[in-house]
Image (tube, rainbow, N blue to C red; front, top):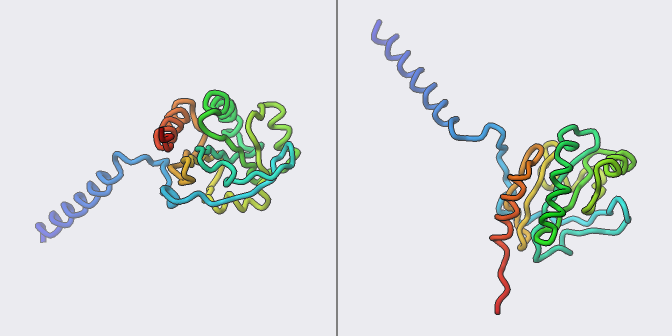
Length: 179
């Protein structure tokens, strides 16, 4: 009887150790992302400032950085200066696009008046594009290569180093011109 209790205790401990071992080394903030390596869902949306139609198709052959944000989102306010910096610093290498998520156009305009808008901000009625991309919350930033394939996403406010690293990766995957 005593050996059965000891054996049961050992089995439970080994099981717990296996679960802990599997968890170590993984990022607890990382969310499984089913669109990685898949073609980016197409969209055509209206730009907040100009009313012009903007589509993913018009940026074919160029990497695209898509950021979903909202004026009511505190982390989005922290992140926005980083995206503004990124658009200025890397705008020749990639097209930056902002997608207004579950917000009013007036609130979005006020947000952008305060924090700047150096890249197109798109209105996503009913958050349909956000659903297509699998957005779980804001901010989320998606990285699409020049071939239109989603290379990854960043959940939460992005920092300058992470943004620069993603843009280097996108540049490395860009096709080179044949001489």
